[in-house]
Image (cartoon, rainbow, N blue to C red; front, side):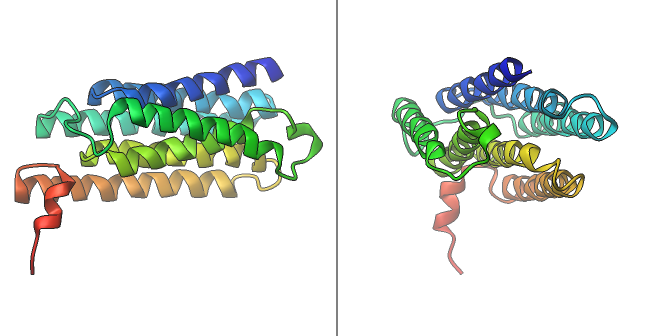
Length: 212
């Protein structure tokens, strides 16, 4: 299963780069949905087929791969936007930053005091790289929906960490992560709806023009 885990984690990293380099919101949502579906396989490939791993995989697939992407597609249909226009940092510089942070994640992971079984693996570098990718999306994009995608990718990085801890803390870590994600999506959905209703735009830069 070690090779299968590495292959899945490499796909997660490639989807990180695709999301950083794409301006099409629909394609970005599909990429994050596919990433969520891939991550949902990891509990089974890491811990084997058992009720706990199957429950976690089913929950992750339902939330990350199906339900949340459906909510986001519904949101972009209602607000009638298709592309991220004029990001704060261009797509090529963002991709370069993504490559640098991914390389830094691999280097940093080598210096962490990990248990023997995790040395040389891709779990920690992938988790760190996905966290940084989500952070880049949050700080370099103007559209609130793209920033929601950044938050989701941040959570995906935390999820990879959680998989390594799930054997020691069964259910607690996974339930907390998934509940946080669900609550965050509802909150962001409410925020998006209110921003669009009040200002007829989801460009968060215009909020800086607000005065009391």
